[in-house]
Length: 379
Ligand code: PMP
Ligand code: GLN
Image (cartoon, rainbow, N blue to C red; front, side, top):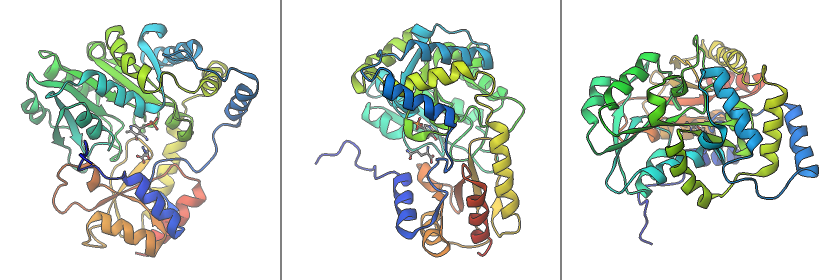
């Protein structure tokens, strides 16, 4: 077969979760909670399936859910949206990102990614005929060098793909980063795709979103996911927010990729958001406690813990333990220690030489975290 993605293999998440299952390891690799979502939300979903509408939803999303999302954005970021024209419900953030890239990137266009970059971005750009240019972020803070960024820009730069809080590093941008991005792209026609799926899992003072940057948001699509915000990654419900002209282009693709997103689950989330506007998205304290529990439990280990400002991922430097490359080290961890982690090199085009980093997901029951740490402390 003349592959359109010859260099693309099976994602590291599928591979590591399969290995964890095969060896009965604690799975701290793929990012998903091992605890249940809010029971009231599950009850709403059950009611919506049994008694609600199980036929196609409107293409752009259930109006009640579009409206509820617009309210969330207004409450958190002060951005007033037209729910009908600027909010699109998609099958996960993944679909929104894929749709946006397919709709906006022309053959030969350049797209800037920040390495390490979430693994879905590059294949989507390649399928659209685009070319990725990558700016490497460096440990320990993984913030961009904006001078180096400016040097990557050209009139061909169609899109910049940003992600804060950042998977896999847990780094968060500062308001000055959004200003620097805006200053750099303002003179060009460049657009921004902001992957904000961890927007409510940040451990600093305030959440940072393109939604609160008046200039930048007019050139941007902002993507988020209820999978992260409500602990239900398997529902695959996300959304894209963008000015009407960008939303219209996104929907041209969305309508033919999935047409619409699952109707009863949209009903459930819309009802949940309407019923519980205050306590929804109170995720930061919850995950800060989990982060700290894991970090404390690993404090006596030979791993060096990198800073974690957001997401539910903690990076560990294992250079005091082994010289193996990170994939080999993770495979050995699964088989010999009974803990599955994610090697970081897979998120780079060219991983920094000698970097020895793995990622642990702390969206897990405390007992899981403590047992994983106990095993890792034996190394
Ligand atoms: N972007 C990032 C950075 C992610 O970590 C994820 C999580 N899977 C996604 C996008 C995709 O989100 P979803 O599961 O809603 O498609
Ligand atoms: N975003 C999740 C992670 O980073 C994985 C999602 C997936 O498996 N596609 O672990």
